[in-house]
Amino acid sequence: GQQVMQIPQYQHVQEGEDFTTYCNSSTTLSNIQWYKQRPGGHPVFLIQLVKSGEVKKQKRLTFQFGEAKKNSSLHITATQTTDVGTYFCAGPRTYNFNKFYFGSGTKLNVKP
Amino acid sequence: DGGITQSPKYLFRKEGQNVTLSCEQNLNHDAMYWYRQDPGQGLRLIYYSQIVNDFQKGDIAEGYSVSREKKESFPLTVTSAQKNPTAFYLCASSIRPSHYNSPLHFGNGTRLTVT
Image (cartoon, rainbow over all chains, first blue to last red; front, side):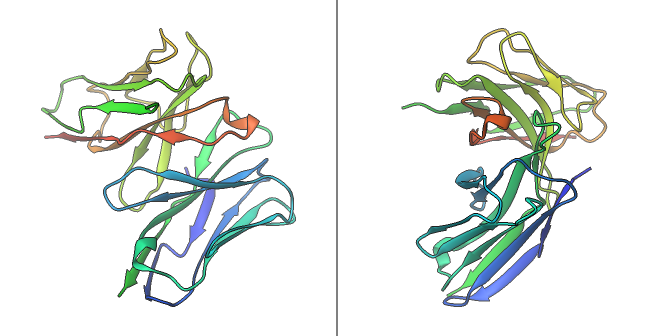
């Protein structure tokens, strides 16, 4: 089953509000990646975090990797309707890096 | 342009029939993967291949088979043994196996419906 959990499963926000999704793993991840899947589309790579405690920004998106490399978060400031989609975290294990696990995803809906 | 091509986009089959989903990449990537996506369950790994002529089972390999005879191609066969085959199937590739920290590039997917 899934070894990487994401919360919340769904999030509905008004345009302009902030949004955060959290990703938690039961074991240490060597790195974590974030993907966005638009409705009806395929996942598209957003960013990768490798170092413990790492923080990266892409315009209104802020990504964090936990100190223990077991959790991560994606924060979107002032959401726009173009942010609509499902956000997934994913990562291989440090001891079984051949398997790339995806979180269950957070579906974001933005009301104009 | 480089990318991953999955065909067909939609596929309909009768129960009991085997069906093969195509995945071709011209990115010169070493590793290729097959994922299954069901509503609310994210992506689950079916099979992956790090190099030609080698592939490994993922978490839900039962009822599926693959081959990797060429670097560019990684077809997935959904056999009649797969109990619940209706799903969205995504093929992906990475320049190196995932433990070298390379991102996945996905195809547009094949939506399989079995009745």
